[in-house]
Image (cartoon, rainbow, N blue to C red; front, side, top):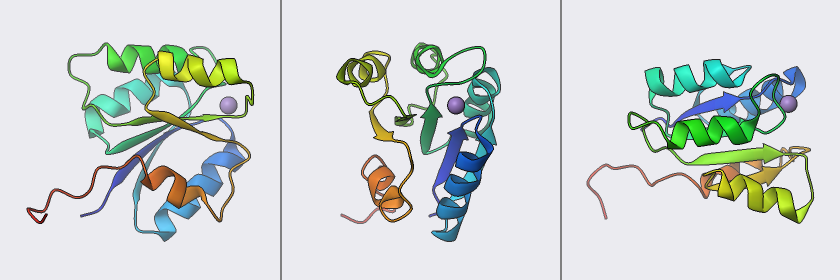
Length: 128
Ligand code: MN
């Protein structure tokens, strides 16, 4: 089974890095560069995991998470905030907005896949 990851991020370097790391480990990657298109793509593609930047142009990551959670058609994928905010209050805020968890920027290429894999459901292939 190939996991599908939706990356909602506006920074080209971060998109490039996450896309590279995910694809090199066999993930399928869908990219959105702002919140509105991210919400649309979540509906269309039903990803297994969403990586959500908090600082986005227009609608920020908190609002995106809240809108996704409130959407009855949402596929219920875990939403992982990718945040450069190191403050404790912001971590609580991303969880309060409905995110499953968060990872911190800058992205560490050595631990990124391991960090996000914790949030993925095991493949539903009938095995225990
Ligand atoms: Mn950003």
